[in-house]
Length: 128
Image 1 (cartoon, rainbow, N blue to C red):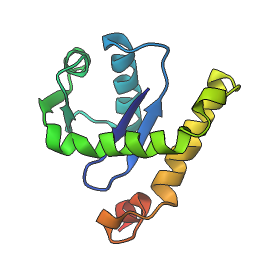
Image 2: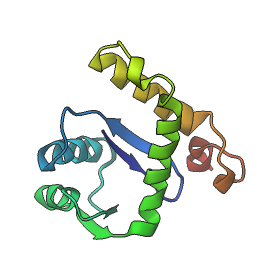
Image 3: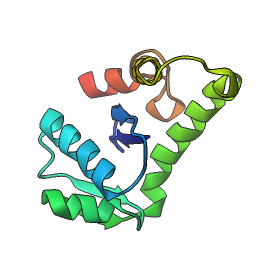
């Protein structure tokens, strides 16, 4: 699973589910993200794994920053809390998992208030 967050607004930009990790799936995710948002002027905050190779392959800039990366790690933790009660008993298809992730992303961006945003949702922060 791959996800991207705007560190200023806390908006989840995209979520994608792949059958494996590595440079190729990371590059596919980043390519899709770049098509949606035109990210050539953006600097990606990454860890030392395959993302740097994938970003370089696509001509996108990156730098290692573990502190600001904590935002996406917090989002993954929030997601994990939500799925822990049922992840072992899920009987749906891969497409139903993708749909659930899309719905969770919508909830996180549009309905869930954030303390760091003074009780606003990320979409409200973007619109202001």
